[in-house]
Image 1: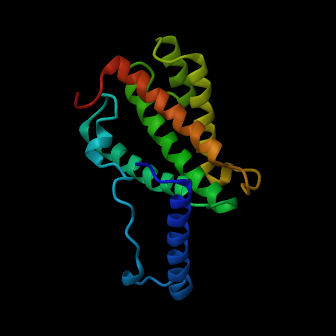
Image 2: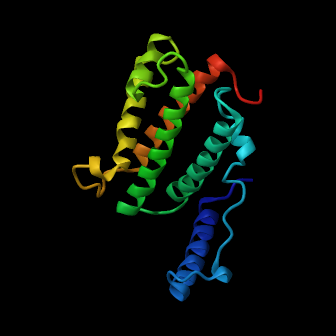
Length: 193
């Protein structure tokens, strides 16, 4: 039976109070006995994540991509299970976008291998549109993802990033990555399937 709204509120209040007490007592000090258990099951296993990937490139690349996706799961937990806000939330979202961008970069290179994989990102997405692998709308979303990911380089950022990124940006980046992943699975099959 699902939890009631009251039961959820009580759980949140208890967890929040306990975390606040630990923070008050230990601050930023690294005390192993003050660590809380990260909720098991939220972070998918590397094996499980590899099974979500298209059957492209080599096993080592898929392994490393699965580790990056585990990092996204950790960041996602912060985004969906905490009240993190402001610049701290924005930077967690930005880091997630950067990981999705790196994954999209890898997938577009693998998908265009021998047919433009050494070209720039937007050339590769154009190639995938020309090949019928992705839609023009998905290309636009992937190009937004890449442009946003490139703001990881401070020398290319011309303005303040304060309050720039939010949960909607996270969802947009996730959607762009996920649609690319599904489009490439439709063509190349799923790894391990």
